[in-house]
Image (cartoon, rainbow, N blue to C red):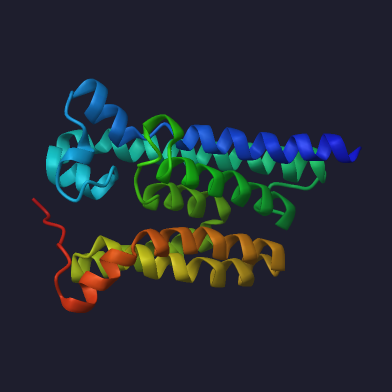
Length: 214
């Protein structure tokens, strides 16, 4: 396969992932269906937690399904094109994992910095969860399990998100033993942590908003 074709495949994975990510479910629902931009309320973040606080649990399911779906589709496309077409590897291979991560990271970037919404989006937690789910069931069990326990105990979604993001590259190493996969997993995790830097400061001061289970 020529270098040009390889570049096109990589570019296709990144572009498909990014533009799928730009379809921010919370933004689309609030701005075009509810006619009340989520970014004008609460924390100003176009993500799941702020949407839940502003519009309630009845509508939040659509945000969860939409953001998970676009991340999962991005990962599947990346795994098929890079793992299958480019390397001829199986879905559980390190090459496929590399493709899934490339598509997933592009989706997270699109979600956080959507070009059609002024580059002001969410923090990518649900997209990150979609990526984790696509990687390996053992990775998902550990990372999402730790997330759920921390949120249940502290009611800080941001804390659970950051800890799960830090665990992600560690668990990827034990499953794939691939340095490129771990590097991209670090990038994905860092995206979540960096987007939550203000939350981390508030947690340190004990001022972070807690999730209310109502």
